[in-house]
Length: 360
Image (cartoon, rainbow, N blue to C red; front, side, top):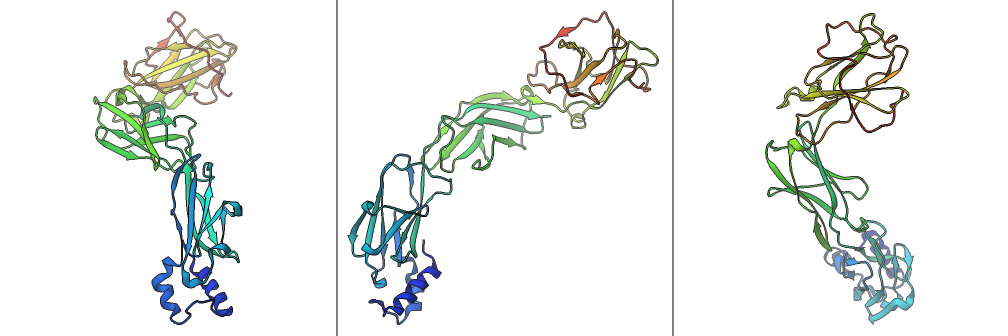
C-alpha cells in the first residue's frame, strides 16, 4: 500500500538533498511504471490466529537511496521497539511480533513501514482472531406464514475478532445474512419461496478466513412455528345497564384475511388484586364475547390474543386493549348487536401462570 502524495514528498526531499543516487531524469515514467515496487511489505494483509508469531519485511526500491537501517515500524500508530527489527539487506528490514493479540477492529490492525522522517512507505493490515465455533440455540418462527426468521447465538465466547459471515441453509438453498460486526442480535429471514406442510431442515453456518462451523440441524414445518398478529380493533364495554357484565369485541388481524385456516381467539381477565387469570379457551373463531357474573365496583384486567389452529405450537402473546383496566359499572356501553359468545359465572375456567399486571 503506497501513497502517491507521500512518495512525491520523498522524491522532492531526495532532489533537494542532491538525489542521493536517485536517477531524477524520467521520474514521471518511474512513478507510472514502478509505483507498486517502490516499497512493499510482505506478507500483505495476513490472517492469523490469536497467539501466533509474525515476521514481516519491508522492502524499498534501491533507486530511493534509502538504507533499511533508517526505516522503522509502527502498529496502529505506535512505534515498535527497535529490538524487534532485523536488517536483512540494505533494502530490506524485518520486524518480528510474538504472541499476537486479537485485532482491535474487524477491519484489521495497521502495520506500517516508515522512512527516517516518518513518511509512510508501505502498509499491511493484520487480521488476528479465531475461527468460529458451532452456533447454538437456533430458533425459528414464522409471522403469519409470510416469512421464516431464525435466530441463534455464536458458539464459545462469541467474538472471533475478525469478520465472520453467517449463512442460513436449507434444502440446497442458502441465504447470506447481514454483517454482525456492529449489530445484534444474530438473526436472518427467509421471505420468499416458502411452502406449508413441508418439513424444513435448517441450520446456520459461520465462516471466516480461519475456519467454519455449522449449528445442529433443526427440522420444522412452517405451521408449527407460526405466530400471528393480535386481534385488531379490540373494545371492551358495558352490556346495557347491567353492572355485572362486560362485552369484548374485536376484528380479525388484517394479515390473516388470506390465512389458510380460520384464526381462533382467546380472552382472559382477572381481578385487579389477583394474579390468577381466568381464561376463555373456547371462544373459537367468534369476534365477540361477554364476561358475566362480574363483581360491581371491582376493577378487571382484560387481555386478548389470536391463536393458530389446534396442534400448532407457537402462539401470539396476550395483548391489552385500551386502558387495560375496566369496571363493569363504569365502562362505556357498546352497541353493536348481541355477543357471539357469553361467559357466565358457571363457566369452567383454566388457571394460567401469573403474569405482571399491564400498565394502567
